[in-house]
Image 1 (cartoon, one colour):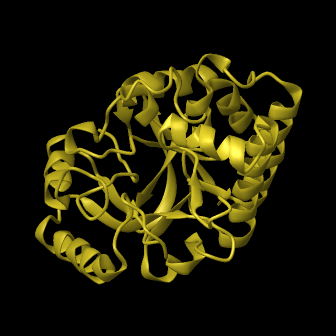
Image 2 (cartoon, rainbow, N blue to C red):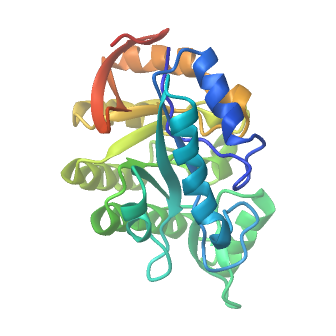
Length: 282
């Protein structure tokens, strides 16, 4: 059995009702499940929850808790961090937990936020117009925003830490072994460790075939293990059938690195639990 705290329903860009996720979780014997729809943002966003639906989202989860007592259900959101615009701290009081993620890096001259994990053509547009084709500036800004988010907004979970790498297929722009890139990761992990945040090990890139490794990459996971930063295993599911997609393979990777515990929400608290390649064991 597993637990998962990163998934998206019809309240944002997911393809399933929340009830379907709960029933899938029960079928898989999962003890805990957290919902994390994309939080509203104050601009047009096709994949974010509408602000007017937030109250219904929270009420629906409370109803599901009553109707499905065999699995512990938690209210979460994946919240973007855009300085002065939106942050995990904005909605934290209404939730059991937050996933803090960077999907936008700065703005185009016309004021549009630049989405960095969408279509590659859009990425190339922002790279050229906002950053004058300087990929190092882009990556440095991405991790600077991640560090600022952790320092100022204290998300429980840092979402898909290095997802920006999907734009770097076949190392088109840089190598992950480049000293400047490694330095950005080291600085970011130091901030995460100081904050006591959890890093999610996200399998979505694997089953979408957008990446050959989870977010974050195995070499980063080794550094996370060396720093004793807690991790949680997530699928970032947008369909109920993906609720534990690639968990066994990724758990095996974590074990090979040296991890023996992952963090889950249990009885209202984040707790480290032992696991094998086949699931959590306590």
